[in-house]
Image (cartoon, rainbow, N blue to C red):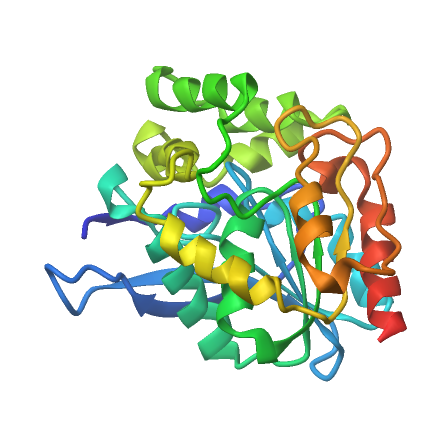
Length: 306
């Protein structure tokens, strides 16, 4: 598997991102050429003995998305682990779209975070693809997680036709000659990002060759029942249909892509009953930019309730 690694100097003096990097090598999951590895980056902030929050980013962001929430969570006593998915941030970036599959993303994070860090008693927080990948991790390792908090995400099984907004996004990701990561983040954020913040979202991608993982992600969302990821997602739903631990939804009020995405969780997951589900107001798709303080408090309150 051919890969690229973003030069470290691209990450020098990023706005509001003072966190120390951590790295782990994982199998590249390339069965045809066994023995290869990928370097995965993750943040690990806060007290080592604090309650763990696994915070997973979506497409096409990276752990920079959590820079506002991390200090608030740490101030509340939590240990925050925020990985960069393969193809994003400081993690390695395979150069062929075909190297990226839903199953591989799950396997990469399983090895990098669950196995390597041996997390237990964790709170999962996921948005966008962070939810699609992370909820699979929770379903595969239910004994390691005490609660789930999700927003602006889902666990699709291909039974419902995608929205026009999503189809347009999928088409753009495949056909646009330029894929402007920072501007994409700005377009799905109500908060006006500074030039430095936009540049920070662009930092992992020196040129278009680094963006194959970002470009292919929209096409990996299961939109039909014959998608190869559907059986595993159906199996994950079977776990969540028996999940009686706390499961909190906090979808935003201004996201055209995931509006109504909380309904399947509220209908099917027993652990949602009696929880204080919240609508994050004045917040677009990347609500970590628009509602960091509210989201951090939702997570801390969930931990506090036990």
